[in-house]
Image (cartoon, rainbow, N blue to C red; front, side):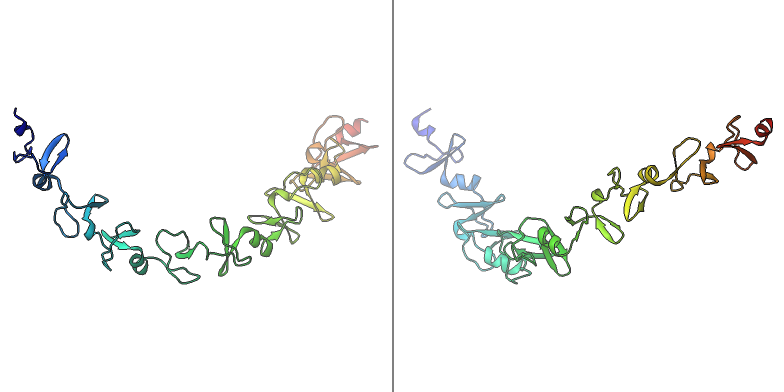
Length: 281
């Protein structure tokens, strides 16, 4: 193969000696063939983007440099920020005017690319979303809405939250009310054993809360039979006789152990007997 043949256009076979050519995948093409075969089509003017033109691309679309303009105001977007809307490219000013949200506080446009806060359909500049009490930007921190304002958590606790009467800290979620006083669930404890009472049955004495077990151990009368506390708080049935009490199941004959509930019985000093055992005595 001669030198002249080796420098021909791969497609049209014209000689490339002394002419401008373009290499693609180790193959040479004259500029005309290269543009016909490989050049991208401009999205704006629909003409091929030639070898002597800059090819600007965005999302697999291409433009001549002079065609890369805002679809609304026609200003060049070359080396400038822009936004896309419905396959159209817009400068930031046009996009903001037509599509950007307005800040609820200052009523100005929230420009594309700037940080903004959104809540329930409203938008704010980051520097305009302020705590209603301390007037400091809330930013990405937690906040609590109240009436028509928004509060950072510390300010909400200071202004609105109940204070636990045990630990004196704010109650932000849940809580328990006892004798018209607020408590954290974890702070509402039995005065005796310090067990949490929230969600449990409890009673009180002298305005102090007790779990049923502590109240029974401290204040309930004791069964003559088993010496354990008798309490009706847990639904236990009992028998009372001459200032003495028995659990129903403990009210039995001291000698034969038959139950005396609902039956006649006799007494012998501190003991009780069924009538049969009593006659034997």
